[in-house]
Length: 590
Image (tube, rainbow, N blue to C red; front, side, top):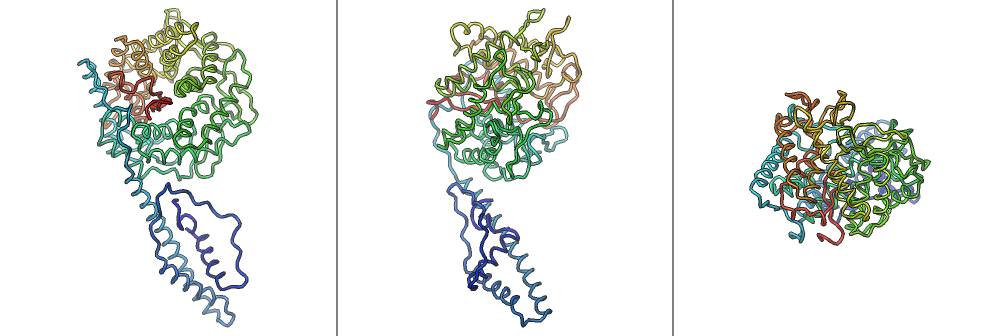
């Protein structure tokens, strides 16, 4: 709760402390207060509403009189009972009053947040990017309309819930958000709404954050998901607008997540309770290990948070992770997907550019770029890791398709995950910063992986790619098991199209993106929004009735940007976190 008496005196404990203060004022042997007083959170410069001191003095006098009577040995049992009952009524009234004060304080705080004004439009950030090409403009407008549909459906039927069920027309939440509704879609959509120039919708989202976004909940959440979606989304909105509300909220959440780092190695737990700070790992993760992609995808957000707050604790935490990863010996130069935060040892030797591993590598090369090319450790770790991955995981199918396989104890499974399709863009982006002997190879990998992932889309009846696809016998880039055939509005393929378009301006990437946009509109637009589908090879498809928050954060943003002018969110001025939330390169975009 906000600062003020409501934060310290609510409930029975507050009543007892108040009785103690009254009694001590007249008693030569005062009751000693507890040694540990609860901390009063900062209110970010916003003051509590004025208190009615005269009313409090009168209440204290009445309570003092009753408290004194209770100590009078001359009173009868009946008189004592009447006084006790009156004290009980006063106690209930006092607790009710304190709760009301808390509500008033919180409402005042919300109003103060609403009154905070954003800084004037600052150099380097635009919401334009109008393409010169008429075809690109038509396609961009199409994507913008898709975003409007997705947002309107959410706002009208699930506002404040984490996600939308577009067919049922109600809210939805996944376990990664714990048991609380924290408006994940609102926060994930902020920067997309802003970039697309949807000003009214952005204002609604911004005011919801100021008035309703709260992390004062007793639930366990995924450190990774809360970081990339919430911390990343809020920091991106701050970077774009300089609206202090977003910085305040990002810091509030990061401080709630800090206890997750209390491990012997400094590598954080996967899950943390936002109220108690208790951290732990998934039972299924290689004997209770932490996951490489999760603890390895904090650096961009937390280093920027240190930059804008001046508080080093955030950067210190992620630098510790970086050092542990660098210093821990690795077989064949490969980073396994599991690491035990208690023992400091690797778990199962499972390596992937898809699930469990992906964004660890992404954050190394983007950490180098975001630092203004000063974070040499990140750069060295990235290219050392890519040399090992190229040698041990990259394969070419019989049909000539390059893919990133899944490595298990020395053998490589001949399949690629949709999640790993982001790596085409990563290799392409990295080629611009690579040592001379890797530049051509990494650009080639970017192009070839983009082509392979495009093939997985082309091979399906819906022209949408499956969760994973295989290269077995006559089958090329096709899902062969039922549990691989679904699509949940994922962005990784269009993400690679976007990056490769910006790097090469090869028209095919825009055309492939347009095919994907049309297919998603045709097969996923249902009810009041967009839904994932259970089988991309079935027409008409069956829908899972979930509009993922990352659809608005990533998929639609990348589709919009690929049809925009390059000046909108330039790749030398911004890096996108793994939820597609742009953060500024050091020295750019004040």
